[in-house]
Figure 1 (spheres, rainbow over the protein chains, first blue to last red):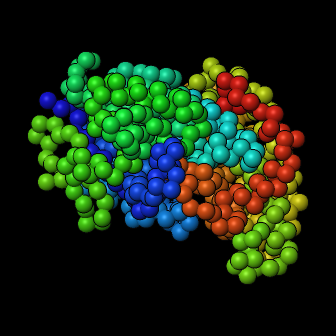
Figure 2: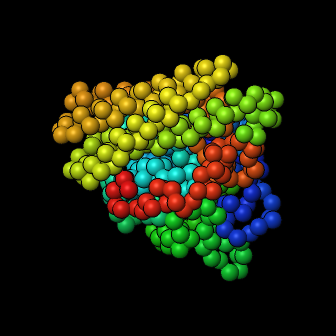
Figure 3: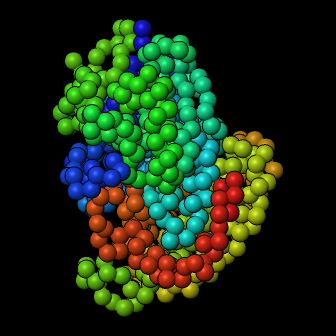
Length: 292
Length: 187
């Protein structure tokens, strides 16, 4: 029986995103839709997010006009599809410090935030380098570190140093050092509560953008192909992907890339009136479906 | 500067202001980040804060340089509002630096000194954001290399492109080029 109900909630999208960024190598192979999304978990008295999304007020117009990010909706509207308010959120796991994953901490006033210590440490360090090093901090918002300080002041910022089991019941975090970012982490939900159980889901952050990163494009010769953007190494991305895949017994669909548009066809899903996808991964006993 | 030409604003004084102010804004932003990192370390890993003492000293110097750079700006009338926020950002950054220094030795996050520090950091961040909103070319996030936005060529002047070109011409003699990851958030 599932301990947590799990949904992936789209909050914006880039309709035409180059496939070559989602996957290292295949140039000139067109575009795919890239949803922006976060995961919502409910269970055991906890309401949990994996990543926060970003705050459109701060730089949404810039993103929309210059980079084609469309159909942004804030967490109040997005979470309402599952009957949740931002104030209800008790915990947030931040997979990495990019604006679209960490840029809305201030919108969850009652949440505790869990992030890898090395992600913040090295990001802060890199942000103090000169502009010629800006590749290392691309997508990082200096205002987010101030928000992290404010959360820490309130005792709501928890820095994790490496792997940790049962951060919350049945939820483990794993450091994927020097991969997409310095201290990216992925989150394992052991949804049957056991250590060796099969009902595991992994939220990969941006360690993968698409299932194709885990399988390659040639079904006759599967391979792990890393994403096309990393401050760390492709080597580390490949081995992190292998670890995630091994952890779920090779069942690719259980390693969730929130930027994967095909989640909506892999799992039960619903298109909301706002044109956003709600994807339902798991339901606890008695929990009402949000996609029916 | 191209973006100013694009929108038809050609007044040389505004261009000169923007060019100089961008450097000052960059320095304020970097120092704010450094002070925020120090504050985060104090609040989450106080035992490691001693590692960052050198960085705090460096931040103090940067704060002074930033204040001097802002004072030296000559803001034409169209940039008066922008300059106001630049000046306020430099002032609150100085307050943040003083507050961070005062927080050394603070044991509890409930210590009032942390209140002063977080207020000053927040104020600086808000003023910086205002500078980014008021004139093009002052954006604080480089979306051009962001994973989810790395797909569209930027317009001239977006992000920190125009400023960074100038900086790159000085590379590798700049301070930044000598910095290496040292196991703490500070070089």
